[in-house]
Length: 97
Image 1 (cartoon, one colour):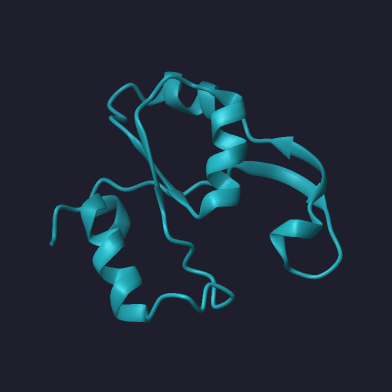
Image 2 (cartoon, one colour):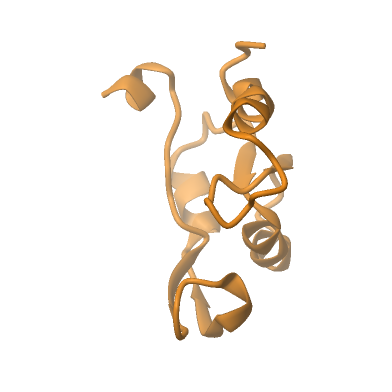
C-alpha cells in the first residue's frame, strides 16, 4: 500500500531462470518478463529504477524505450555499501534526498 501511494511498482526483470544458489553469476536460461507490455499497459510510467547491475544488463537487452537508472543492489551480497549509502542512493525514486 505504501509503494502504491508513492506511485511505485515493483516487478522482476526476469520471469524465470535456472541457477544454483542465489548469486546472479549463476543465472542460466533467463526468460524476461514482458516489461514492454507492462509499460504499454501503464502509460504513466516515466522511468524504471533497476536493482543492481544484473537487472540493468537484462533490462538493456529488452529496451522498452523508457529512461532508466541502475541503482545499487539492495542484496546483502552487495557489501561494498552500507545500508545508509544504499538508502541514500535509492531515495531518488521518491525525490527524498
